[in-house]
Length: 95
Image (cartoon, rainbow, N blue to C red; front, side):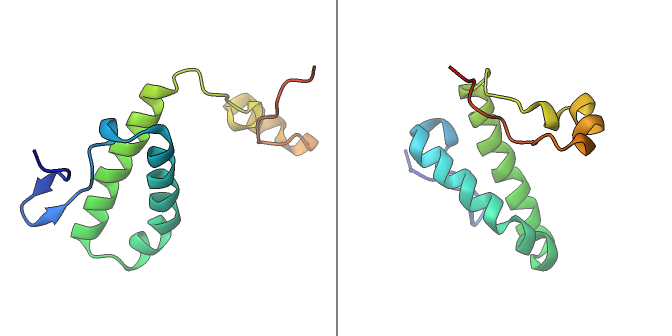
């Protein structure tokens, strides 16, 4: 079996479930870093491929991390209160 999934002539990368946690995070960081340029300047095919790959990688991350920390400021209720100076980034619980 090939390490990369192929769709026509397009290489979409290694299946996310075959990546270890470190590789998955590196792929997610890379795809988020390139998102803006792809949206603004990529062809429709490039944007479509980017969307598909991002969904695959994010889906795998969520599957592996169902109990990931959620910042209160990133919820609807928290967003309403954000004006009070609360950070939108989760912090480690104090000990």
